[in-house]
Figure 1 (cartoon, rainbow, N blue to C red):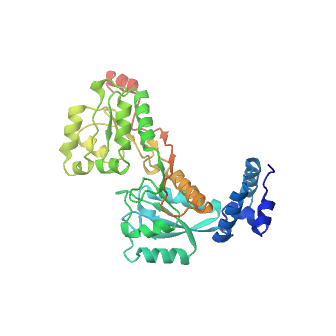
Figure 2 (cartoon, rainbow, N blue to C red):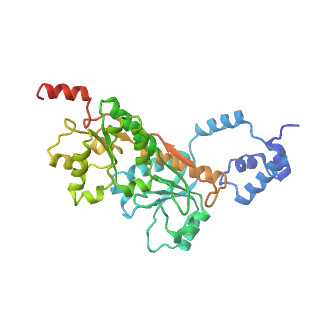
Length: 356
């Protein structure tokens, strides 16, 4: 059977070879109806792209100056309308989204998910008026359900969520690999000689990521002697007002290193007369440059934002609109950052023997 070429598709579809090339790449320069017509012709003829040629063309395109392609919507899903600038971690997602979008020739218009003036019809009208091709949702920190009244928006545009997996509807998403980052943090603790690592996490946050924090901790603890498996402390919010909840748990189980998302454990331990890292270590599960001296896991939220842009642009190029039947996930690996909130236990014990 002869190789089906773009020239053959162009002749069959009654258009130029260049139009065929752009249409098969999902270029927004070609009207959607024309792209669909050309894809149908290509499918009927049995066209298969040459992987080597496609790779070479991609390299050539990447070496050229990026031209403006289209606009995307960057949606602030946090309750704080200023979270893109003021939140402790959300700006990193935004930075990654904007960096990758600019690299691909896209720009962003920003929206607030909880804007009371914007109903679904208003959203759709504004997005179409501004020729926005897709949406990226950033900042879902307290729930993973999108507003039900905005369902028509997700049904009409390519959309990707960052940070969490959404429910009702379930959209494609990018986020850090929460399970792996806990496993890595646990393994670093053991490598330093800690014997009773413990997870300190608010139950609400653990539920937000479908138990991947606590599930990973339980998995990691299976390699410990049963007597060294410390139960997860899940009452951070209550303990802010009822400190004895934390102290009671700590005194009962005596962990030697805490894996936590919260800096509040530092003053709590200090109030108890415990020194970090001399008496107990702390590993921050979301390391921040603003507290660079703390040991922890860099979640690379900027890379999560970059991945979200790649995903939504892919949806645009493949004309994938609406709620996906099979949502896709891109998981970003976290990495260990050395700090001063943990120390090798052999060193600690030597100092203790020397009276340090």
